[in-house]
Image (cartoon, rainbow, N blue to C red; front, side, top):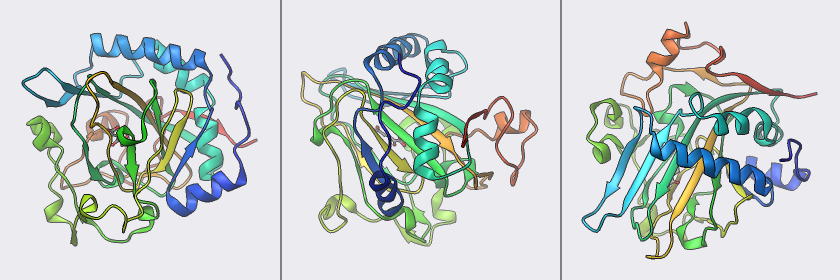
Length: 283
Ligand SMILES: O=C(O)CCC(=O)C(=O)O
C-alpha cells in the first residue's frame, strides 16, 4: 500500500484542473488501496449510515445506493483519507497550503441500472463556500466512457446561480429538500439537449485512476449500465485555503449544518475541528 504519490502530478494536469475545473488522473492509487476501499464499501453497503439513500429503484430490482459521511465508522475509509496520497493530490492540484477533509460520498449502481445523476454543481448544495474545493471521483471497478460521470469544462467559472435539481425529489426525504428557485437567477441549462456545444467530456477509467473536479464544475450522467455491468464509485471531497462555512437558507444537501453547529462552527468560520481534519500541508 503506497502512501506516497505513485507519480508526480504534471504542471499540465494542474493547469487543466484550473482551466476546465476537471482533470482525469491516471494511475494514482495502487491495487491495495482499491482492495481496501472495496472492503470498506462492502461494510458501508451492509451497514449504511442514517444518511444513506436509494436514489433510484425500478421494478426489475436495479438500484442506485448513495451514502455519505461514513468515514468515522468505517476503518478502511479512515485509513484511505489519512494515509493515501489523496489529500496531497488535491493540495497540488488546488495549489493550496493546506487541505482539510470534507466528506465522502459513495454511488453504487447495481448491474443494468440506467439511472443518470442529474446535471448539477455541488457547491450550491453544500454547507461551505470556496473555490478551493476538490472532489476525487474514484471508480473501484473499470468504467466505460459511456457510463462515466460527465463534465462541462469551464463551468466552474460561471457566475450565475442556477435553478438546480432538488435531489430531495429523488428520495422524498424532507431532510434533502433544497429549493433553488428562491435564489436562482437562471434556469439550469439543458446540457443533454446539445452536449457538443457545452464541450461535455468523460473518460474510460480503470481502478486506480480518478477524476478531480472543482465543487463548482457542472457534472452529471454516469449510469446507463449494461445488464452485466455494475458501477461502484468512492468519492472524497477536500477543502483548501479559501473555504469557509456557509449555511444556506434555501436548504443544503447533504445538510451538515447540525453536525457543524455541534462542533461550534458557524457561517464564515474555517472548517476545522476533528470533523474536518487537516490532512495535508505544503512542505
Ligand atoms: O457518480 C455519480 O453518479 C454522481 C457523483 C457526484 O455527483 C459527485 O461526486 O458529486
